[in-house]
Amino acid sequence: MVRIQHAARVALVVAATAFSASTPAAAIDVPHGKIIAQRWCAECHLVSPDQTRAKADAPSFADVASRKTSREISAFLTDPHPRMPDMTLSRDEIADLVGYIKSLGPGPEEPVTTPPKSGPDVPAMPKSG
Image (cartoon, rainbow, N blue to C red; front, side):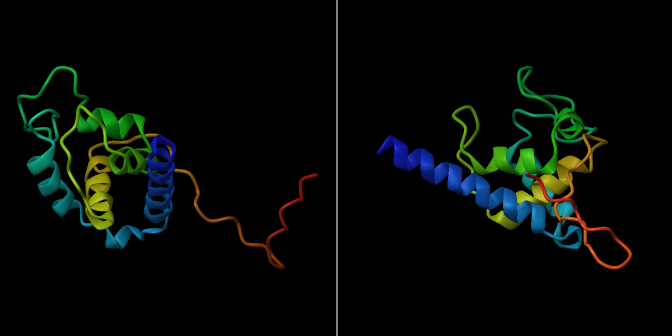
């Protein structure tokens, strides 16, 4: 039973990661992400620059934005964690929340999610092996 639950969680994280990588930037609603952050996260985390109180052991959202890629944040939010509230967010809400977090500061370079095109002006990728 534990293996099945773990496999289901892994599948969910993979699906959410794939979704977040394919979500167009225009579809992300950063102001809605801020509302979600204030509702679900502000009790423990500093979610905005004007917030003055949070738990000492919870990283600020600006810190998370500086250390994690969008994929990493999305995967984290998709997988339940014992120290966090049991919030059930839709994929769109996760994308909005990730968009808000990433809007708080520069962070690691986001990985390219589409392979380079090949054609007459672009050399084909060499095959490995």
